[in-house]
Amino acid sequence: MTSPRSALTSTPEWQELKTCQERLKSSPMRALFTDDPGRAKRYFIDGAGLSLDFSKNRLTDDVLDALMALARRCKLGDRRAALLGGEKVNVTENRPALHTALRNPGADSLVVDGVDVIAEVNSTLKRMDTFVQEVLSQSRKGYTGKAFTDVVSIGIGGSFLGPKLVTEALQPYRQPGLRCHYVANIDGTEICETLAKVNPETTLFLVQSKSFGTRETLENSKVARKWFLDHCSNTQAVASHFMAVTANTPAAQAFGIDPDNVFPMWDWVGGRYSLWSAIGLPVALTVGMDNFRALLAGAHAMDTHFRDAPLEKNLPVVMAMLGIWYNNFWGSETHAILPYDHYLRSLPDHLQQLDMESSGKRVSQHGESLDYQSGPVIWGGVGANGQHAYHQLIHQGTRLIPADFIIPLQTHNPVATHHADLFANCLGQSRAMMTGKTLEEAKAELAAGGWCEADVERLAPHKVIPGNQPSNTLMMEKVTPETVGALIALYEHRTFVQGVIWDIDSFDQWGVELGKQLGQDILPRLLKPGAESKASDSATDNLIELFRKSNRL
Ligand code: F6P
Image 1 (cartoon, rainbow, N blue to C red):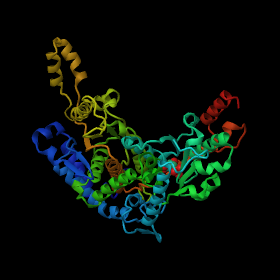
Image 2: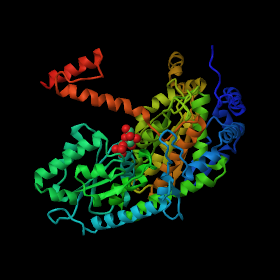
Image 3: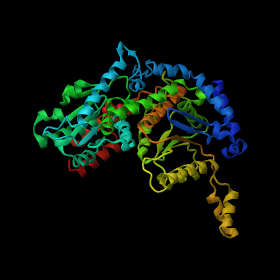
Image 4: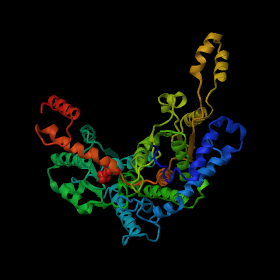
């Protein structure tokens, strides 16, 4: 017996898209380009300093219309207004998701549960202004009176990935004087290697944790504090070297951080959307507050575009609906993020958390099982390096892999003809994905290369590239605070729009809890024989034994 179709899959819009998919199966993109020379200009939109060429997709005007009709059927406009207006869109945690308010300090007010969040945002930005100014001007110093030279940011997940991405992305805007390091993992190597590089007299530690309950962050912070006290043996000095960003000030205080050194976070900011809050302090310390505010302004410009642009010309909406098209109608299982820019090398990592924590859901926001696929696997890496690694699978593997190529038109580092070379590689890849190479073309190429007929027949099938692999090309003039802000906000909204279509709660992440609990249950058994455990099975027990033996415990 088949289960009844959900409200989504039984809509006429969904059914229409299925019909479109059937129709388009026999029209590869190559043919679409030949038949319609105007498509490149028609399937090109821009907003907030970003431009999107989405012509290299399995797309016709009918499909685009049908995708937008589905978005309308899912009440995207209302859901977007609910998000931006501070309604409790995170239904399972009964909270708004107001990251957009963090980048809108110029707004009049936005009252949530009796509190004006814009006033909170502005007062925190003001505190950040003062703090960053004091550190960068060297009026705030370490316990021996020396200026700070290093910042160690300790945090994981959203309290790490976004700030790390932006710190790297904005290196051309780096202020002189401060180096920024990130420690995330409970792998002791990371904190040890970092501490080995810094001097306790001149190092500022930022403990970054919305909950102030994340084990990795707390254990690393304890190691950092012990290392610090081993060097200076003055507990008072902790106050001038340890700061925290958290929504849980009492826990930060209990850890020993002076409440004056705690920057606030709020329930209405999700971890993976928190880089725009004081969690962005490592960024602000690296590039200065003016650039941090420019980052916020870029993100705000994308928020405005998302709010106001018609759906067909709306960057996050178009990109989201193309993702739905492949995920739900063509059976793609992954989505590749391919930045062709060294400064954006950590974008795939950040988007992995953003998208996979948000869209890794199997029930609707009302708790009903989904009868359609939700979020794909997000992966990727910097081009052109990927061309010498996983692109082979994109070109000749058996899977459908939609990809986003992301590239600035100008580089910060003009050297020889590198940037033109990089751009050519980027275009070459997306064109190869689109056109592929037919058997006839492969044969002709081999014959022209002087191969005998038998070899031509033998080798040609190996040289065939099916093509018809979809891609977007997303561009900005240059990697700047504004364009980086807009780029990240674009993907946040893309993720939100897909969540609206799938009718999931994009802002919770209950799935990560079980593994955390089991880890905590297993830990005492690694350290002490006979410790009580709920997490017992023959595989876990064997591996615990192996660890204990190896470490003579
Ligand atoms: O384990 C997942 C998670 O809760 C993420 O959503 C979050 O970004 C990360 O852990 C870190 O959480 P916190 O900032 O509370 O330490």
